[in-house]
Image: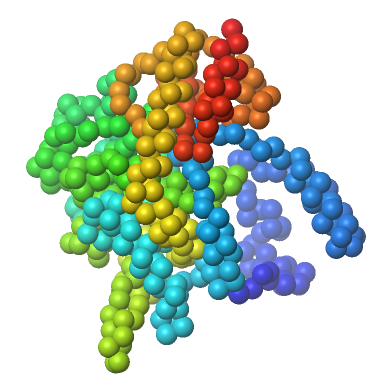
Length: 445
């Protein structure tokens, strides 16, 4: 495994010439200037090791330890110490694909166990590995639906899906030559009637999210029947952690389950890394991207793990591949495997019970202040959305002064969410922390 590639100046000039460009910076011309950091990092050129360590320790001390009351796809759940202890072992610290079963039995085994756990939580027949995150796994599920239905080229997306996920789906579909349309919401819930009106012979799949963008638990009664009658596929993006207590995608009648695994033992960690999951029915296994680990028996009758299905894009022409998934997310899958093995069924249930209790306690306290109201009045688990007349900038400023990140304004996702604000509570938040948050917001005007 190479830490870096020691290209000489001559190497770089030769590559630039072959690409017909003058500088490496030209490779990034397609990126908006607003997302490119052009300032000097001000890293000293000459320091001893001890001086360099002290320098970066000083930089690290500028970071603030925040108490998180935010959600929207990234949740501050408890991470058992055993996860870091095991995942930091050198034999696991690589993301490369285990192509040689004879020397990769340990890696193949925990990927197999990961897949089995995802199958159990989703209720689906089979799970793969190697999805980058929940948003891209949902986009890949859309590709699966289009491939399975063949001549159909449109995807229906619920308006209650996280807008960040929607943007990723739109990007994927656009460059695949697929179309999309939206199902309206009613009181924060996907409108069944609107979906039925938009189902036609062009619809390859319908995508929903549960709990949805607002944190609300949707029941999806009548969805599966209508979608299957239209010969389309039902795709459900679900917060995998909540499946310890909520109905599984299989029980909702979904054909494909997908979503984010960050809530299963992975830290928030400045926004990454994340891990997506993808599970489906056995008859669609050949349309799945990524890879699937399975087991067989060797000549001595011992159980042996193998790559049952590999990513075809690594062996055939890209235009014929199911997707563009190449790297193996097995290290992140190991996080999930250790977490679920440690917590078990009862532990995961307890996590959701504590999150439910804490979030509803905060919800009640905020409503009691008279500064917040519930625009939806629907069921939720650990995350909820309220309406407020308070300045969102004022809320953010007041909370950040006390090292609290939460009360996230949804206005950044569109003007239709102007007065809406998001809160999330996991099992890590104490009653004292919740009371402190309420006290701060109660004093605002």
